[in-house]
Structure formats: C-alpha cells, structure tokens
Length: 93
Image (cartoon, rainbow, N blue to C red; front, side, top):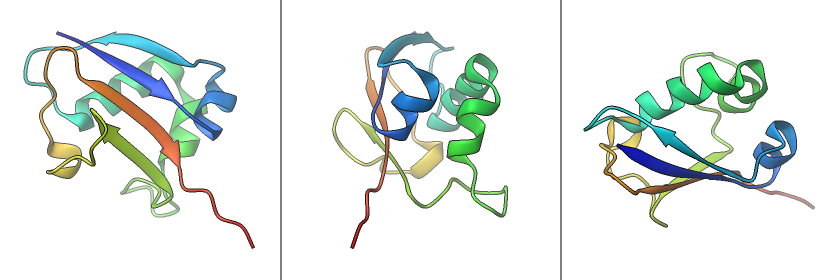
C-alpha cells in the first residue's frame, strides 16, 4: 500500500523534503512507517524523533493521520492513501 507523508517545520528543514510517497505492506502501523522513514532518511530523522530516553518519541513531535491524532498511538494501523503529517510543537515566550 502507499501512504503520503508531509513534513513541516524542523522535519522539512532537516530532511529538505516537503512530501513523499512511501510504500508499506498492508496493515502496517505508524511504528512501521517510522522504521521505514529511518531507513530512508537515517540519522537526520532519527535525531528529530527520539527523546532523550531513546525509548519513546520526542514529546515535541506531533504526528497526524488524515488531520487527526492517531487513536492508538504508534500501533495505529495505516490504510491505503492515508496522509501522515510530521511536525513539532512550536513554543516561545
């Protein structure tokens, strides 16, 4: 199946990619997509995604599927044609 990935903010700057189409096996999860993106982009995306503990996503990372937060986190199943957006929380003061 194919899904469409869009990058915003730090993701777009670090990867120098606005969007791309990714092919995954049927019923792949969001976690599987992240694994594939690390294969494609290597350390550039890994540095953005990982938290200091290296066991979870960085809490400033926001991922949406078709405009909504994933209902089952990284175990959310993806479907053909899903649009996944990657961005980071912006803060300031």
